Length: 389
Image (cartoon, rainbow, N blue to C red; front, side, top):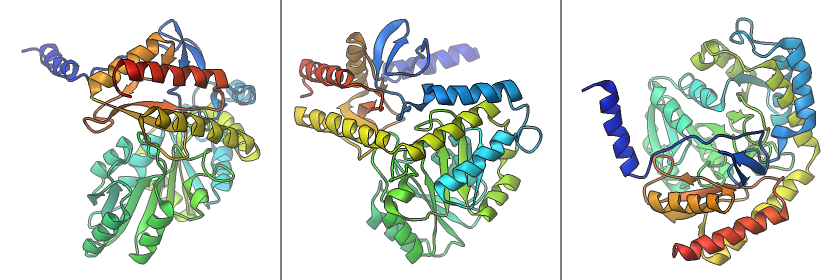
């Protein structure tokens, strides 16, 4: 049997399980109405929560840096990739997050892997939330420390596992700030309280909370007014660009700079991206009205879908998971949305548990009242057609 024949057999199993995925082509930059595979649709699946990705001031900032520094960074940050704009952005994230120091990574995925494979050692243990992002799971797998999973946001289970792991040298609790598939917020205040009681360190991946939660958009630490030991984040959500970061004490950042392989051996993000990200953070901190507007739209969608009879999950975040059930039914639902001019792909295993496939809606500040009305009408019609509501 050839390699292709073997892989074809495995792909057939994927197709038969309703889990086959294909790419769709976006024909221009992110906005609420886009051409997707040459079809004009409303997009309700973007992480561009504050509409930053196509703001003129960010594009202008990127253009200036592009002309000055070129299209790529030309190397890792430890060789030729650490430009003036990398330095400036790291300092800006530090002041924004109110920490001591920050280190940029080429993605949030690499940031999670960098921290978890580097900081905990053999003889340590990581306590990881059941629904943490795949990058956290992979980071735990790469770590020399042991890993134990606690039930999703279950503080009683977390405390029981803390009690049973007192024999380890050091303990680390790792959690998403906002869970990417369920849209709920981790009870970071309770997690930090437990960590203090049981002499444990706290690491938070604040990818989906940065720019959205807290009075100034600083994330779950500001939302709960607590200070985790290490905060991991990304610029690819509300900030509207790309790349990841880790922020914390000067010592922890210096340690990662010298030991995190996913930082040391990875080409740095382009300076133009850093310039745009810097500009976005300034705007996020200054413009509190955008977050208020976003929360208002989120509440409208969640409340209406719940009243229709859907099982809707999530908290005060732009991620609104609407449970459908089987992978096949979720795919059919997404196809019917697409026929009506709405792009919101089905989320299926392994991203979510079997039987919990869903349409994962994301709301942005750029969605108009008319956009939201069309979305809700489509959900009402399709839900009745498929006997979901």
